[in-house]
Image (cartoon, rainbow, N blue to C red; front, side):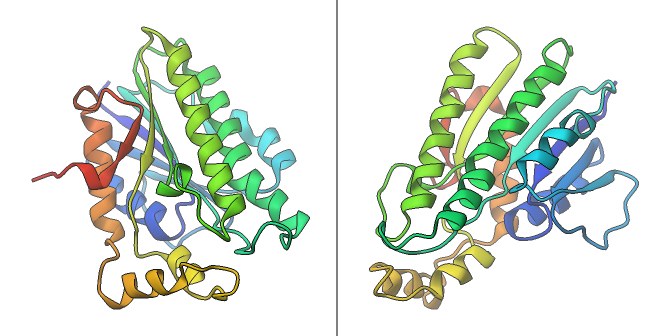
Length: 244
């Protein structure tokens, strides 16, 4: 039994896409990618699942089919999918947008983590869950009320899961990926400065080349998950470690 499995949400673009390609490049990994849209990628090691993670009823019905019951040396869940949502001050936020944001950023990864533990609690492999967090989980950003709140809640959920795991062979990480050059950053730069006072700073990140390549972040995430004993804390930030 030398094959491993990684399940990645939001694999169709940005960091999720970079993670998918990186893990497919490693001989012993099979990949399950979950997104609303699928990619034109042909690989015997890839299974794509088309799911809208904002639709919790559909997700709930599909959960048992997501996680295969085969034997793996290692099984990883990376809850990467996230949505910056409506960038508006509190008081101007739309209830529908808020609900979608909570579903995608918080409830979907909670559902998936719960189902992952249920599926593999008796599986004799190493099991890891990596919930992609953000610096916004610990820093209030004006205009990001929904995003900051959902990321903070997901970080706490991850810490609770880790506390409950005790001496089991599950590991849990809440990982901040840094400021990555993805479509989310492009959406942030389109916000109105009246709604988002930090707009100028985020425009400068792009102009001054301070955004990080998603492929480089994917390699650092894979390094962390391949060497969990080097990272004893649940909360991690890719900006705090280097790989050769």
